[in-house]
Image (cartoon, rainbow, N blue to C red; front, side, top):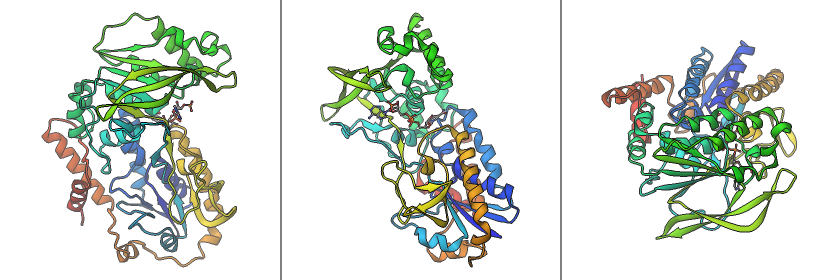
Length: 448
Ligand code: NAP
């Protein structure tokens, strides 16, 4: 058997495991995850109200329940206290790193770290019950929020801020976040792009959802939109951007519904500074930009301040280096050729990457399929040489000897049962456990 470890149980890890076992009957895969729960960003990144995308978990479950695939949660690879990359390499014929892009990009402007200013990833982690998330009363005392960036994550956090309690309680959001958002007094949400509407990164389906939120008006300024030449004449735009423009035009022409909340989509404004009020963020200072004719923008020296007691910086994710693996700090990815890790420009036999740590934080979940396929093809082509190495038949005893007690599938199923029971006791569907202690206790209750 060819024994492969896949590090990371998100979509790229699961698609990699699936490709390996489907294409070669002599492959066994252990899918390792730092968390006791599988599914990566599908569990901890996809917005709770996106039930359809969340249901992808059922497909990923099928992969992890395959007879030659095993889930091993609670196994940290690299980092303080983690299993060193070099040691993991000794336990398997090959290792595929599918560790995603775990941190957020920074704006590098004054005031960015004021209390009340958060990365969107911190906010997403909190309402998704990630056990490392901090609850710092994101919306407490806030009436106006600024979301910086116009990608799909910005749309997600904007929508979550505008959702009412009734809609949120139908989700698997943890009780603390639900209570906080249900009590939120945020009524003005400004989502701000530094370039024009034709250059926004959100997809039309996600954009349209903002217009369907109950009791919420979407406000756009036709004059601001028209600063973008492609807004006035979208004929040369690719279809996806043209559809975005159509949606924005519809909103520009529609009368206000008089909802309790307003989402204001703003463009050609780049963040210059976060301004403090009483030791917290009080406003965002933005510089008006104009198109430079080459897809970028230039500043005009004119500024606008938008009052905000909550700022969510949603300007993209970034890969994090893993001790013992090469890393390109410029791109935030691991250098590779066709998924094979490159060390000093040469292929490192037996080490592979897939997903965001391979190609950067772009694309939708499905983009991970072809990405994983390329890596699987490379790995299986190398298999005849890799399989000659001596590795243990079962890595779990070796992991235990290193002080790691993996959470196996039964442990994860126990977590699912506890979350279902918690939800039932609250009159809701399954409700996620938000902290390490309760996740570990639930996993232990399923131990054989
Ligand atoms: P993204 O799509 O790369 O968008 C980042 C946004 O931040 C862009 O508008 C970008 O503007 C802006 N930005 C970057 N640096 C900035 C700066 N210094 N100042 C101001 N604005 C700045 O990233 P994302 O929203 O985090 O999404 C990551 C990936 O996940 C995407 O592929 C996305 O489609 C996917 N995703 C999908 C869904 C879904 O399908 N429902 C949900 C969530 C995420 P510029 O364009 O000017 O750089």
